[in-house]
Image 1 (cartoon, rainbow, N blue to C red):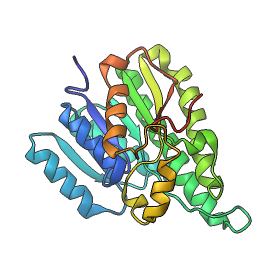
Image 2: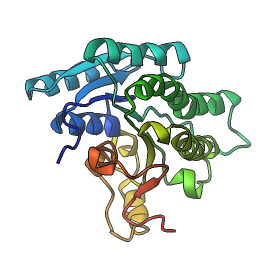
Image 3: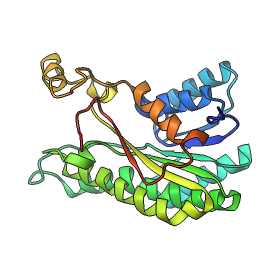
Image 4: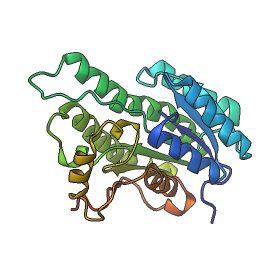
Length: 249
């Protein structure tokens, strides 16, 4: 199985949580990995050291990918350092939850720019390099909230639903150059962001999941690595829900 061996991958928001797990899994599969981070320099350096210690090739790179120029700089750094970019994982994301009547305009703008515009920025920059090579894998991290909606998350849900539209549209644009574009929609995943949720609430939410457990960051990383691999070459424009059966249909 060719997997992701000898490929070069850029993972945005890679210093923590799901992004960190994706970077580790891609490196384990033999890919060279560019770890993008914005604020968590120490966490990014620690992750880079872990990958290097295991014999992997890695480059930590700071960039605010909600800014087009910085997203372009990230992709350029990957090409300059490793000679190419084969895989882009658009994972950078934030939440600013609030009912719409009380949500500040800034909370809308930050979430849309970080979650959606950053994916457009990075994809725009990466597809140029991928089209020249006539090869590429783009995987966008959306959410089941982007499919089903969630009260108090109109900004987050809109950004994640937008990622689904971006995925399908871009998949049609670049398919003729052997570039695939897919999305992974996590359900309830145990991360730093869920650490503040009360045990009673965690248990209540678990009851809504047919598989009766919360997902792990590794569950998401395995799905992303598959979609980024050679074995997924005939899959494009799809949204894969990794949610224990929470959202069906």
